[in-house]
Image (tube, rainbow, N blue to C red; front, side, top):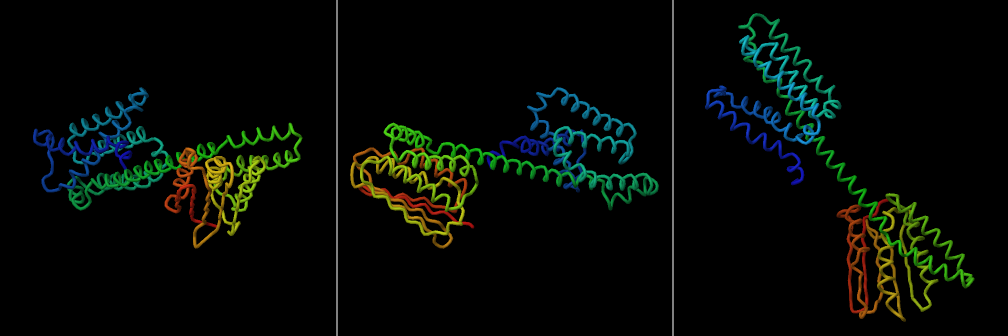
Length: 376
């Protein structure tokens, strides 16, 4: 909301100063404000507020575009010509003045908000064409001037300005929509960057281990190559998708676990229980951060009796991923590092209030519970 107000502060300024200006000019005798029809004052103030605000709002654009400035000046010349003609001919609701002023307002709108004008020109024409024709009919073909003035009491001319607040509200809505789209695009860009940060060093470490296995002509080398290939393919291609099947995510986690088992020379107890509808979909690469932390900050810090227990299940409208591992309390833990921050940010962007991430730490045990809303 604050960003929105800052972006459109020119309109707040325009609307806040125009009414005092009106009353000052009236006090100086330069204009005459109607005492009874106060709503007329606010309608005209709204219109002139927009007139003041739009050039200020587009100041940087006008500064860069000298041709646009010339057009603005030309429009104001047209405006003063219309006022001069109106004063010289001294005719109530002079049709010539009316046409010139209508051209001024439409030209100004086109100049300052061209994309909006191009998009809604049919709507503008639909609104103003019948109003314009109706005014011409009343002013020129309904009888003499006295007859027109009598009709005008029932159908005041300011009716032509009523659509302006409607069109202005539509323009505000377009700007709001633009801001929302901008936020969505920003979120998508941020998500892409967060996905790109998903632990590339794991692949480098595995390649190093693979190199060592090939030197020793180990029988495990082909198996490592196959699993690593599957993981890289999943990360690159499936990781770009908005959602993946749980079955694919489970296979990805299994490959990760198997690769780690191959490289460990110590005994590690790893249990992966999953009782869940594998056709359910989730955002990709959410669980791997937690599993990676369990290995990096748990198993890697222990020389013996290391364990990791994983439970993946569904309950009511949620999917639960619970992972627990032990660690060496003497080792400095970095479990709250960039990986977990990355995950929290992704969850807030993707699931908003439909998730919960809870961490429980005891003396030598680290347990993380991730709860996310499920959808088929």
